Image (cartoon, rainbow, N blue to C red):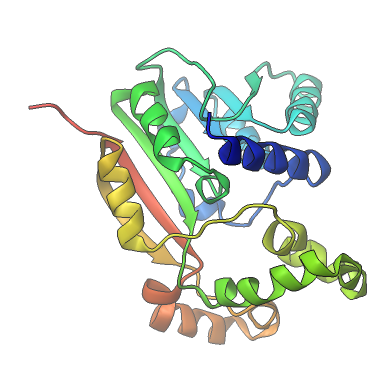
Amino acid sequence: MNQTAEKIKNNVRAFYNKHPMSNFGILQKLDLPKQIRGKKVLDAGCGSGFFLFDYLFYGADVTGIDQSENSIEFVRQQANALGFRPTLIACDLETVSLPDNSFDYIFCTYVLHHTPNPRIVLEQFRRWCKKDGTIKLIISHKYAPDVFIQRIITPIFRTVPQLSKIVPACIKKRIHWEDRYEHPYWRQMSKQQVIDLCMSSGLEIRSIQVYGFSIFLLSYFMPPIVGKALNALLGNHFGRAIGVEAAPQKIT
């Protein structure tokens, strides 16, 4: 394996063992089907299980994969305490081996932009997803204002990590500070890059949308009506996320 890619994956694994991530507040954007009861669902990059537990409560047969051993162990303990027994695997998405045509739904939320080889991951999804199944992705958008701010802030805090201590803990928690500004690897994509990536990986895009306009901390303090207006006006072009619904390409 490419040594640089292996180093990136090791750094990302160490980061999430130290900073397990959970709720990004975007569950509604997954448009979670109520019909997943009894369906086989893969949570690819499940973190500490925020979405995974929703799938369990909806009655799905859930498999969760994450390269953070700490996150997987946390999910296992919480699931067992609630009486659930999901299949949980501590491994990176590029190398994990799963049977072909296994899942009705594959959800991958804010994971691909932390992956050195996203095409390999999507090719895995294509094989694992049933022919009539659904793959839902959420990916960080390259042209979001937050991303430009991130490109300025991240090198500063990597160079002088002590500066991070001046940021109040309440703000760090609110904006998922570590994941946004201290993550060892983050590659944002444009809408067209996501389209090209999906098509080259053998996926057929059913729908794709840019959404969620925000400007650093201002979005958390401005009146909701202002936030909604800005999102309606600018979200389709400068939103912070790209939501994709895809499926394996049909062979004709």
